[in-house]
Image (cartoon, rainbow, N blue to C red):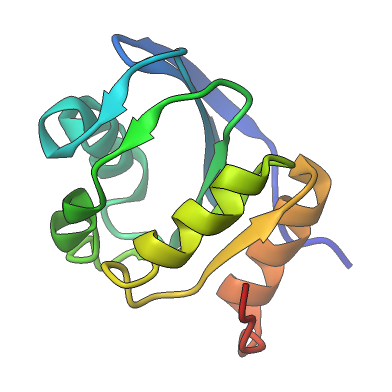
Length: 135
């Protein structure tokens, strides 16, 4: 039985679109941005509004190409209610980038090919013991 719930709100941030659901959010960032601690502050603010005291999973739908400064995970990992990150992409470079990003973020982090696969994983991360996934 699916435990993920309904749409809550959509935000248009300077770095892209963020859609909030009951226990996860999905981002689609703008082409060419650099996601760093500074540029992610607005996104972190959205998580504080909706998930300050509630566990959630962050799903990034990497439909556009953009750079990620992996040192931002040093701050993001301190968000106690963030239980995992799902990266949705079919690009080979995102697979390799994820290997680097995992060194900075010590919570579950996994690559998926579809949003549906990622939202199914939300249930696993939040309600079950997540399987160790090495990718």
